[in-house]
Amino acid sequence: MTRVAAIDCGTNSIRLLVADVDPESGELVDLDRRMTIVRLGQGVDRTGRLAPEALERTFAACREYAQVIAGHGARAVRFVATSATRDAENREVFVRGVAEILGVEPEVITGDQEAAFSFTGATKELAGQDSYLVVDIGGGSTEFVVGDDRVRAARSVDIGCVRLTERHLVREDGVLDPPTPAAIATVRADIEAALDLAEETVPLREPRTLVGLAGSVTTVAAIALGLRGYDSAAIHRSRIPYEKVKEITGHLLAATHAERAGIPVIHPGRVDVIGAGALVLLAIMERTGAQEVVVSEHDILDGIAYQAADTADTADPADPADPADPA
Image (cartoon, rainbow, N blue to C red; front, side, top):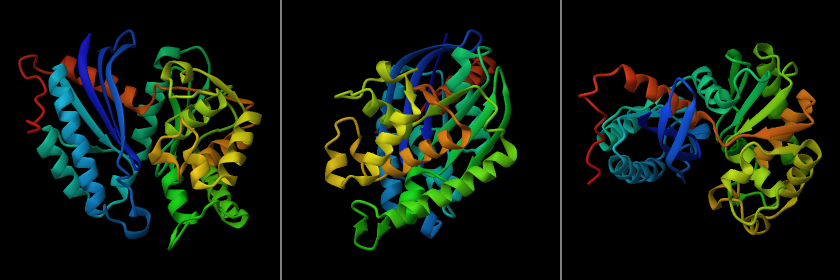
């Protein structure tokens, strides 16, 4: 087993996994898994730049993660940044700041790379059992991957819960509360156009099993399961039927901010964006004809950890990862 640290920095959240990994068998044992809402992608769709306050929130989370990584003695650290950072003109400020804190440069990966990481993380424990469509609904983008024991087609499109909310569900005085039918229709139109693009590359309707990843999907699952608090073990590999997803999406889009905030399993950082995220999931199920979604807590973060373990096993064992002193 190789001890590694994987960090996934997306548009809405930054997540850390410290784990012992056997890249051959696919066994992965969590030692520490945590998530912080930093909203790195705040305003990126409009300005093309990472906001100073968003960068500082992200760097604060990195300092916390550096302490955790050092405490567990991870042999390798891999930091991957996705949609918001790909889109930002000033991403070098982000890269430099992360390197100073953690001692590793973030890899700003392409949408196709993001899709491959997500597929590996979601299906490695299931490999060879079925054909899968894996969808990773993030803050700025959604990744679609089709495969069985390997990736056969992948596409990343620019629809995500934060991007769609900022584009269509906010006005100058704040988030529409609740959004109007007209605003929801514009979100749906964006989603449908993005699905058309994805379907040019990925045969969305062919796989037998739809696997859903990331916070929008797991939050919908937690609501569907009637959980009073977030329970990863209950959510992982749960199967949520289409009719339940449709019901929950309608409820979230009709609710006020206060009503959504009163649902205990919705993280405070997702209250304003969960409606758009749920609508992406619903539209995917309708496009593909999926009668249920299999929810996975194993996603891009786990895929990054597997790759970090592969890298560590080929590196000089006398030169372990050494995150910068967080102090």
